[in-house]
Length: 360
Ligand code: 6MZ
Image (cartoon, rainbow, N blue to C red):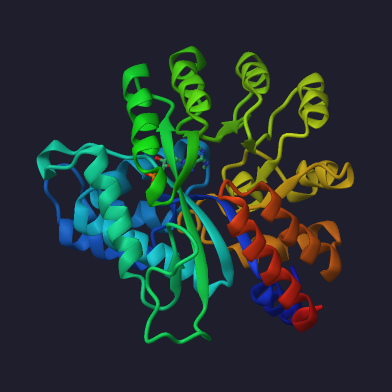
């Protein structure tokens, strides 16, 4: 049985953290989901009792995760709900002492609700404006939500990534890149490729990713959640700014990843819960960390996997024997991989300098 080190857990909570891989719909609170199920009722599309059961059982395989996401999208794809889940996600990350959040989401059309990809994103921005437990910096250095000029209030930098789903057609993926460009002054800083890794073809999406690169938008790719050497090699050829997961790489691809020094977003709980990695002891974090490969601990889907960023740090500490100084450095170095500008990086670096005296 695992012995919980309460002092270390609390320290991981207090550590200022940078989150680089968090999906909006994967970060919905269970309580909100259950409320949405109740309000939705049985209408022939979803049966409440079955859905409640699915939500509480969580994503215990990749297949189950994508079944759940299909349900979440039915429940949460209207403007009011998008606004609400965004507000709640940011408040939850801030309460966990996350000082920079790169929140990613797939802009969705929902004709029945009069939703376009742009209006979906506007609802996300509206949600950020409603956050009231913390000051949110979205566009630049001035705060969007400063309440009563209170300088002691906590502050979180939030930047957005627009996700392209792997099942999208080329034209739709290019549309998402153009939307990201249109919203560059509204906190959008890059593009993510995600979705069910057993679906879609790299060649369909590549033109959109090349388009993003031409426009100067940084790109991060979900890579190696299933064994697909051809695609993994194509992703390494593309040489994006960051990669997520990198679980199932063949030896030569692994060596190439390391020589390219592409920063990796590590999602420990997610990889274990989806059974992509059988046991934490076998997780590739250990090898990357030992090789001083650039990496950052991330949550992936806090709601779906019942985790927090503090919990990911705690897990890394107890599973791989990292001390507090090493954990602090790990958190601090993530600042180097954010897609936000140098100004934000400077602010974050300063936050770490201040925190050093307090918690080390
Ligand atoms: C791949 C994932 C993912 O965009 O609707 N997503 N894609 N692998 C994962 N690991 C488990 N976790 C989340 O957030 C939910 C969407 O993010 C992607 C999937 O496309 C999922 O539908 P948004 O806010």
